Image (tube, rainbow, N blue to C red; front, side):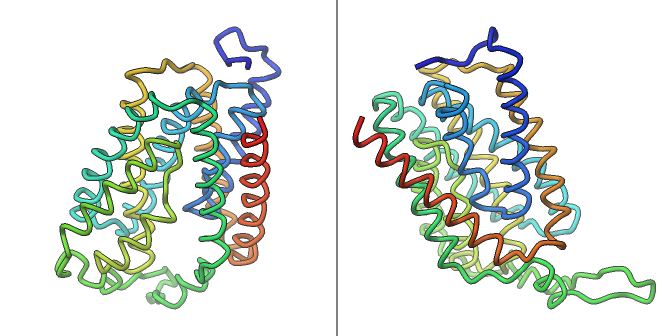
Length: 283
């Protein structure tokens, strides 16, 4: 298998930019699950070695999540204390997962990733999230100047909630291990945990999940870095393009029916995951 490197043809970098932009758009539109295509694109389109692709995807997901976090933080939709608790336990698990990945073959990791993609698609298909615009309208009001005002109560007294701390830490560890192993952010696992275990409302959970995902993605990369070297130039190109795409995706959230888009994307991810699983099992 061809491994992407600094001598990669310029036309392949153009392809990487275009596809990464699509990853960013999907992430901006959909939030959790949007980055699940990063590894398949790196491996099957750009010819990156599976282990290197997983390590690179962790960097891409971490940077893109940090960029998306800024807007949520400005809107006050991040529970920093809870995010830090969940994120630190997730970092420990992700670092461990990254180390464990070094003892598994690239084929096994791709099979695990395919299973993760299938699980993500089912979570997105079966989820009952409201369209973003409707949710904001329901939880917000306008002041005398017509500006959108989000009530402070939307935090649902998150920081005062009686948290089952050991369950939050355990969940963070488990989700972190999965992230470190297969290179997926695991947003579809983080958000429900923050809602059910930490008592956050859905918007605050979405914003806080970006903090958690960025923390454990970088920790997972450090685990991989102990046994894998990545192409930082290609990683930077993919990351920058994905960040720009996420801004455009965020803009379109109010223009595109969120639920319809989410279901359609989930079906696409399901097809990709099944095809990848079949391909690797028959290899």
